Amino acid sequence: MTNYDKRPVVRVDDAADACLVGWDAILPQLAAARDLCVECYPGAPVPAIVAALREAWPEAEVVDTAALFRDPAVLDGEIDALLGDDPVFARFPAIGIADFLDAAKVAAWRAGRVPGRRTIVVGPGAATVLRARDRLVYVAMARWELQQRQRRGEIANLGGSDRPARAAALYRRAFFVDWRVGDAIKYALLPKADFVVEANGPVPRMIAGDTYHRALDAVAARPFRVVPFFDAGPWGGQWMRRTFDLPDGPPNYAWCFDCVPEENSLLLGFGEEAFELPALDLVRLRPDALLGGDIVARFGAEFPIRFDLLDTMEGGNLSLQVHPRADYARAAFGLPYTQDESYYLLDAGADACVYLGLTDAAEPAALGEALSAAQAGGPAPDVDALVNRLPARAHDHFLIPAGTIHCSGRDAMVLEISATPYIFTFKLWDWDRLGLDGRPRPIHLEHGLANIDWTRRETVTRTELVNQVTPVASGSDWRRERTGLHPLEFIETERAWFETSVELDTAGTLNVLNLVAGTAAMVESPDGAFAPFEVHYAETFVIPAALGRYRLRSLGPPGGASAVMRAWVRPTEQ
Image 1: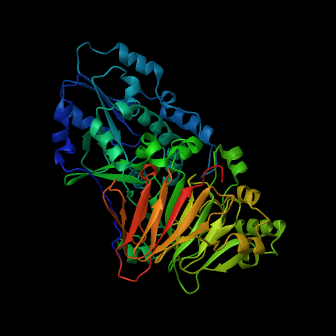
Image 2 (image 1 turned 135 degrees about the vertical axis):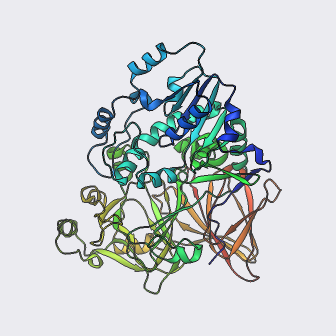
Image 3 (image 1 turned 60 degrees about the horizontal axis):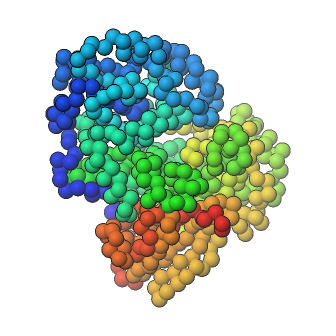
């Protein structure tokens, strides 16, 4: 067991009253507003908020924006048509909150307002409905919490009907529609919000708008971690449960999302209270300090690097899969870039392996026929005859540019370092097993076979994709070595080994790191620009671009080797 911190807090303010907890503390701050707008992220508990406001001010007109939406069945039909019938993928449609609101209902409500009566509008689209207001409150939600509520059947999609829907379908529509609509509203309003509320737990918490922005400035000026979340899977293992002291409930832990800012949260500390906000807020509202000018110029306010953990210790193989090549991702899904990735082995069992690249004997027609027959209920494909099965040991690094057929085998603990288009993975074979919901997981042979790079066979795989380690610099008790990624991938990775300390520099661009060896280390500023920041084994942490030089100092026993894996975006001229 390690000291892995499952709820890292970024300390912002020692004054506990900066974060108000519960309606009794929140409502007095809103009492002076005659026209109050409470804009909510899709999935926020609008009925509970409406009930609290009606109880506090029974004389007021409190409007739930859902009453002003178009017919849910009609919206369902239109959105279904936009997204198509693939159970996982779609293109991001051009849709906004105006497409959900019924213009006639909104006009009728505005015409019927009673002059002088207190008005409170609550829900997604509230700021569109109530254009003139005395106070603007924004209610935020964490993505992971929204996914849990989807799985529990507690929330529907934005504007959706009460038709039965599996959690996977709710997630798909939220990913492609609800969250994009919500983000467009959110990042237009947050710069001018008077208050920000988070509604992830049973009790709401609120901070002032200027406190929120001061907190973002504070996070962007120091090293930090996002709040990791863990999820089970059909191939999941037991390493993270033991090493990170995770709860016994789930059958396994397959994934740890330890730095995926579109999905993860930040915890802001105010005295004894913590305020949770999506890490994406920092990306969108402080891009230059966090990401650096080169990344913003190339990707916009997007965090292009993802670190996550994949645990197959005492588990099974990941699905055999491939990621879309860049031209295909752009043409089929409108993506600006694709999911190039790599597997770095934190730990490995005696028989651990990685499947990577095609064998010399694999032929396109034979591979396609074998996978198609298996998908139709025929015999399982002979994967070992078609895909290279490579032994894997701790600290091996396997590079996986898009188009490379691959998967991790069982008994491996993988740090996955990748670009971040999120869900665009084409499964080719899932080892004849069911998902945790008792259903087969979707297979995408047509997409997958169209994207396999048939040149990545045994020689190319072994000479270009496995342990491409070259020295960078060294000192008396430290050394830096480049480990990837492949020239076709835009992420650069470097491993730094050190016994006492090693100095690094962001060079004006975002750095993402993981302590892959050693018990703990301190991140320090050579000139005192930020407070020392402690990290522990297997924790991923972020160094904002603006920080420049920083030092890693080992907190492990004397003579013991510590190491970090560091990733950044290569400058475009390289």
